[in-house]
Amino acid sequence: MSQLKSSLGPVLAVFILAVVYSYGDKNAQDRKAGSSEVTILKKKKQPNIVLLFTDDAGYGDFGFQGSTIFKTPELDKFASEGMLFKEAYVSGAVCGPSRAGLLTGRYQQRFGFEENNVPGYMSASGLDNEAMGLPTHIPTVANYLDSLGYQNALLGKWHMGGEDKFHPLRRGFHYFYGFRGGARSYFPYSEEELKDLYSEKRLEENFGGFKEHEGYLTEVLADKSLEFIEKNKNNPFFLMVSFNGVHTPMEAKKEDLDQFPDLKGKRKTLAAMTLAVDRACGRIFDQLKQLGLDDHTIVIYTNDNGGPTDSNASSNYPLSGTKANHLEGGIRVPFIVRWPEVAKPNTTYPYPVSTLDLLPTFVSAAGGDVDEMRELDGVDLKPFISGELKERPHEYLYWKKENRGVVRANDWKLLRFPDRPAELYNIAEDISEQNNLASQHPEKVKELYKKLFSWEAGLERPLWQLKRLYEVKAMERMDEYRTSVKDPKE
Image 1 (cartoon, rainbow, N blue to C red):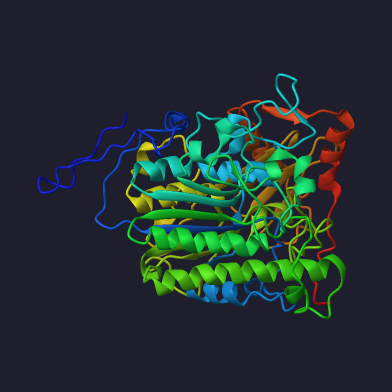
Image 2 (spheres, rainbow, N blue to C red):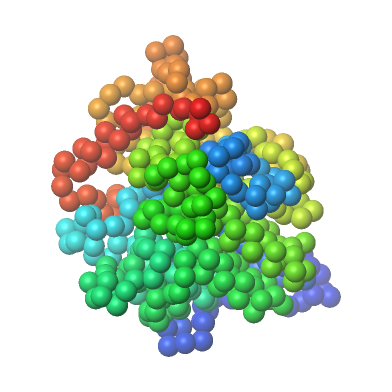
């Protein structure tokens, strides 16, 4: 147990140590799973925290990222009010691992969450879908914020395990409205469809209250967000809106489709789905302003991985690569922070950051002592955002899936493959990763190989894996796929 600090003086002699994660129902004891003792210096006024998190969006499919085709007026305005990060990364190139890293502040490979927990995989025991989820002994950002007195809500996609023991309400969240799996319809399922529906696609409120929504799910998630904000306007809260937009299935409202008469097929549907997400974000921004909370709320928008250019026709321009591979298009994401009195409006941040940094940033802002949390891989971004610290937040960042591995060292990036020579790029000079410098800098390749091997030595074995060998080979070969980096405006 970490020692409580006494620097607040004799006037404030009350220290708050919350180690009981009880949310007031029959599952209270279960919520202790994944809890962690946190040193707390209670602040007089803690900021609210809103994380807007989209799914499978293309890096270039936003106005603030340069698109002239897609319409994102609310997020464009939001970007002008905050700080836009030019080199923001996720810790995994697919949905589940990326979320596991964000929620824990740790490289997910440290606890074996290396693959997506989806049908077609098997656990280390060899049993299909057994216990595939975020290990219950690992604390989440919601656990830490719960101990600091926050009310926490997760809306939308979970994808951290379908079994009850992995449920958000047992991982530090107090309210959940969404679905446990990785994707589902945006429109309600019929009674006939529900009979044979994969259980993790079902919509539920809190624990086990399965009931289909009415309307379009992106808009319903915005409705639920407004309700939660209104209910908790007098309490510090953490709201994570985990949109399933713009993940497949490709489904959009007719009125949104009509906004893009010059587009066709998946590209048209994706534009409409993106517009719906943008509108939902705008409603949340408006609610914060109307309630007088916007000046005391940290709001962050980001995405879970690169766009899958094949399944939803997204554009990662000017990046090469897509979701599921480790080129920039698979792991670099849009990232905006609006933090009053910390992040200067309409500015950019040039250095690499990671979604691993969100947990320590949020916990520190809420009053927790992240210096005591030595197991974290992320860092508190506040001093970097404010300009107090001028150096880079990370000298090294790492990625791994099966035999593929990546290390970014300042502006150098090494990609290791199981079946062909490594590739080396200078990202500052070659954002599209077109000029492989490995043969010109063999010593740099050797140096970064050693860094990657050293990092891997501290990881756990994957908790589950693909069942069939040919599927493993297919995943390994995905890194050979490289987009043409064609500007979608052309």
